Length: 121
Image (cartoon, rainbow, N blue to C red; front, side):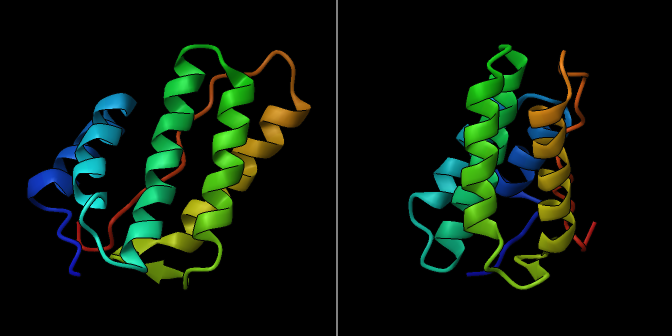
């Protein structure tokens, strides 16, 4: 499977994600995830879990955010540093930093979403 972050549902989801429209990003990426083969399917599931985590954070559900980021990290860590045109290394580091903040800082400060940055853009 080839990831095209410049058009179609992947690009739409990325635009939504960058606009903090996390539920819409989830919906766009889920349409691709449903028919994706492995290992792309699990990778997309990890990205979707990141988007849903930040949707939970928008709704002040820090426990849901923490659990989904932990699940996303478990899915994404086995991938190489770059996969599907995304810097997995950068994304996983960002997730770890957000988890550290969620578990140590109260009240939770505003958190930037982890960077999902295609290399081609």
